[in-house]
Length: 514
Image (cartoon, rainbow, N blue to C red; front, side, top):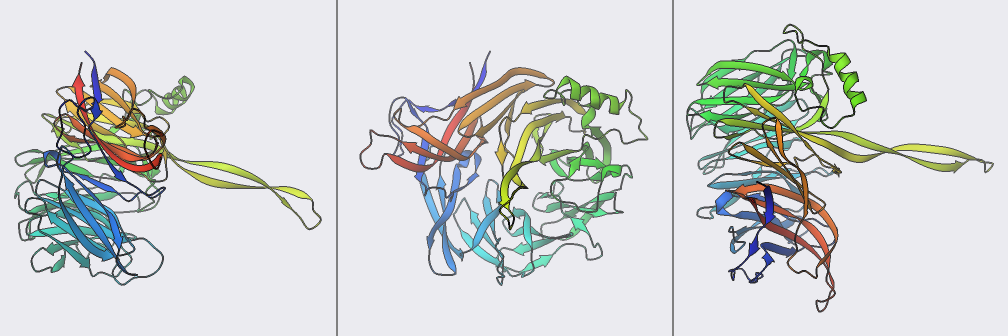
């Protein structure tokens, strides 16, 4: 039995203008300027997809941003326009079954009065507003959550992150961050499992330069703190990231990455922090029921893509036995984490490993007398992705299995998650889109059911020839459907007029068993 992601084709006349009957890919194309990537995507599950972009320059200081909704058949249903500061860029998006939101941020060097603006849309009645966040400090948005009555966002500056509540009606904001903690991070904001209309957020605060602790704040519908839970420090470890998933009516599982305290440098280091393993903390109501740490060096499949020589070196440093009183050997991996997802009774947690890649450029310079001498400089080439580390855990935080997904040839200047995944019964499908090629792999626990498979993204016309792919991605959409998108430069000599076009495409794909 073969599991595959397939391009979805039209077999009947479709309702969208571009569609054809017959063997035509289920694909939408929008014109895109060459070497400019204006389109952003927000998936809404069975409610379709939002494409938003800067559509017009109104004045020296104002730009129009358009949000366009397409249903699951790529039929356009509505469009909303917003007038924002011209130099703002979208940096943080949120969506659920009712609301979407995007925070726009100024990332230039020139000072502007208010560097952040928030756009909100109710996708049921298309009501909307744009809000200028009147906080002039040098801040960067890190989290966003949209509700019917209140919205929440956090702004990050140096060693401190601040959480704000916005009243969607009165437009009044409140600061929800404790003032007595100097250095802190907010790792997550989510729905309160005890009060569905309320909010739960976490606070990571330092205890010392090498240890920290996590505290949960439970808020009711009006934003009042009604419960708190302190997860005390463990002197052996420093928590780098944390996220959570609701596992029951009043239960949740907190999952994240940690580094050994002995390998930690500084209180809040750069985004390229080293990681030793993952931790899992099971919480029922407001009580800790389980707390586990899992060192990557002991994972069954972690060494799948390294040489035998390197494996022997690692095993020599690791030793044969674990000692609960010691933190264990650290692989010091650089990782991008994805939020954990619950599938039936299994929580899936994915990390993507990478390293910064550099090259040396050699040039000849000449002195006053014309004598040559070499002049070398190191140039940053981007982040080289290596592999995805995927784990399956019980809702109680017990590790069931681990596996690995090779991320071949991905080199990027931006650190964004590349893997999308979907658990079908016990089979976990993983995929990524790079350079217009869909790469898939199927695993069942520790075992590999299907090794890496490669397939090209299809074009509408068989006479289309793709010259270049850029900014490609694939995400899980709904049911057994995936959405692949990106930019292509296409040449088609059979078309009248321009034979070369730059397009943004979205293509619907289906996970199938053959």
